[in-house]
Each structure stands twice: as C-alpha cells, then as structure tokens.
Length: 322
Image (cartoon, rainbow, N blue to C red; front, side, top):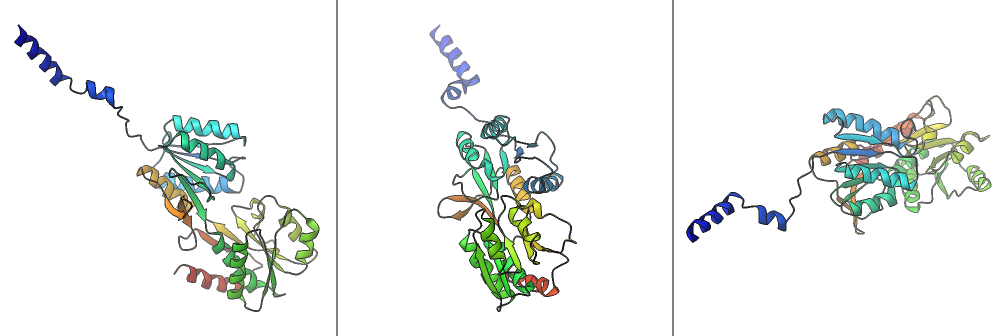
C-alpha cells in the first residue's frame, strides 16, 4: 500500500513540476512594443514642436508600418494633473515607449519614470533628466548659433550683428561663426529680460539679429517693426511666430531643428526593445544629441539673403560635418 501511495505522489510531481516554482517567482511576460506621443498645449496646428513631431511621426508610421493601438497620440490641457494622468494611463495601457513634447513635461516625466521603470520615456529638446529610462533628445545649440553667426556676418552691411540670448556658450559660438562669415564684423550680445527700452537701445547698434528668445513674439515684433531695417534670424520649430512667407523683407533665415531622424530613431529603438541612451554628459544625462553631422540642423534662407551668405553657410556646414 505504501509503495502505491509513493508512486502516485511521484507521478503528480512529474506532471505538475512548476507549481512550487510559480509561487516563488513571478514570470513577467515580455511586453509588445507600443509607442505613444504626449503633445504639448495646443495639440496640432501650433506651427511649433507639436506639428514638427507629428509630421515626423507620420513618416515613421509609414516607414515601420505602425497603426493603432501600437502607436497613439494624446493631447494635454497643460495642467500638471492632466499631464500626470495621461502619462500614467499610457503606462498602464501597455505603451512601452512614450515620447513627450515640451519642457512642461519635465517634472512629470521624472516622476512617472520612477513609478514605471520598465517604460522608456523621451523628452524632446531637453537635456536635464538623469535617469536610464529617460532619453533626452537634444539639439546642439552651439552649432545652431555658429551657423546663425556665419549667416549674419555675411549679410551685414553695417558690419555689426547681434545675438539675443542668456546663454554665454551660444553667444561665443555665434561670435566664432561671425568671424568665419566675415572677420571685419563686430558682434554684440543682449540678454533680453522683458525690458523694451534696453532692447531698442541694443538694436540701434546692429543690422542683423539672431534671437534665441522663444517665450513669445515680443522680440520678433520689435525687430520687424523697427524704423531701421534689421534682418532677423529665427529658429524653428522653437519660434512659431517666425513661420512666415518668404517674401517678408525682414526675415533673413531660420535655423531649423529637423525632428525626422530623432523620431524615427526613437520609434525604431522602441520596436527593437532598446533605447537611445548615449551618455550626454558626466552628470548621468542619457539620450542622443542631434546636430549638423546627423543632418538635424539646417538653414533656410529667404529672399533678403545675399548669395555670399548662402555660400559661407554651405562652407561652414561642410566643415561641421567632417
């Protein structure tokens, strides 16, 4: 009798060998790759980052044959609660990669990335969050300023140009670009803080300006309505207000951040179950830098641009690509 009971117990153990193991360790299934984009205030039609990211995403969707529910786009009303709720919802809904647009997501992404460590986040046009599951997608502002300096110096008749920026490194790059564009040109820097009188005083000394003021159109409007003709170099998609017809005589050029490559690489990494986590600096900031060499920084000239400026900028781009 004892032998029959023993044989029965051994038989049950062989048939159901995983029961005891399942109690000790939970097996987490490998998630199916899904990509979501959380847009900034205004959703589509903002002529800024929302539109640029959406356009790049449409190209990536065709390239990788993505359809819902494997790719999803959501808006926000701009409040921290709405951003937080939407990101948590996307994480709980199985999205493995979430691309966020705008600095307004910075603190929220930092928080939700800790709550959901298996989800990979990306923050567009930022370089501040130091977590392994956050990809900071950053454009090289120094190279952008350098190209603006080249274009401005090669276009200036007064031989005096300016940059409006609080960033001393970008200002130095602008000056270096100006030297390449025309060594005889002087450069001036203005740290605009809302003082209209100080801005107007600064503008009296220059005839070409590269503005990094992106918060509103005040600097742009001041320049284009100036009694003196001052050529303006804008930034896209940062400055929605500088997206105007090429026939405008005050617009010299725009320095463009192309989102096609960053979005394509983010989507591809998500589908490959990997991430863009190059080391951007020693402070533990991960992601990827995009620049002239990657084809992600370009210059668009308008009707007021002299041929000498176009030629100098082409030479500068060739040098930066080496």
